[in-house]
Picture 1 (tube, protein in one colour):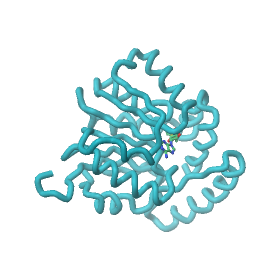
Picture 2: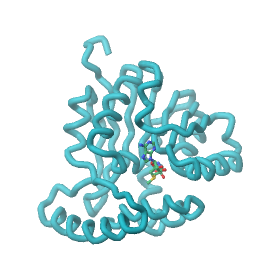
Picture 3: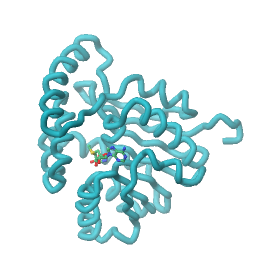
Picture 4: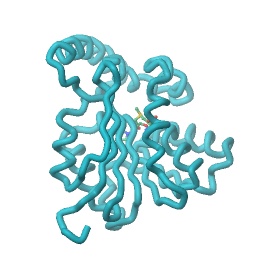
Length: 223
Ligand SMILES: C[S@@+](CC[C@H](N)C(=O)[O-])C[C@H]1O[C@@H](n2cnc3c(N)ncnc32)[C@H](O)[C@@H]1O
């Protein structure tokens, strides 16, 4: 699964993204998505950050949530829109071409749930800090932040192995796409500092894919 960063390559051909990522993760990602989405309830206001082709967006819309799905790549959004139309979920979803940098325009305490699948690892460290703080601001008190993303294994040997394979793939991906990804590091600590309490946390067998649900507790005791 250090191959996860190959997802950057599939983003250059959005029509093949879903098939590519399924092959890459052996379907494991779908199981993670299905599990994390149980936290979304009917009528919830949901923001999906870096929605891509809509894997999480469509799952949330299926649960009759009201979803705003944002992404900076208009071609990924086109695929997501087409999938939503086919599944007849379009009325529940607003797709917007928008980046993490524009989260500052979202009003305070708007969302019950913020979703983020494989997008945080595509951000710079500065953007990641900004995103986490903004998510805390725009979530309602006790709102949920649901994250699935690549992480650094905790065990030393696994981390060493992942680091080795990752550096090979990283070069390859950079040569083809001009970009790369960064596996999340100490993510639990980071979000706790931003005013979240981790309510569930799971890793896959290889320890490099995390699934996390965190509740906003806020700095204010009333929150
Ligand atoms: C690996 S894809 C994952 C897509 C989808 N969330 C999923 O789980 O299938 C990451 C997505 O994040 C988007 N993305 C990357 N950086 C972003 C940013 N700064 N703001 C918004 N979206 C971003 C990419 O365009 C891409 O569609």
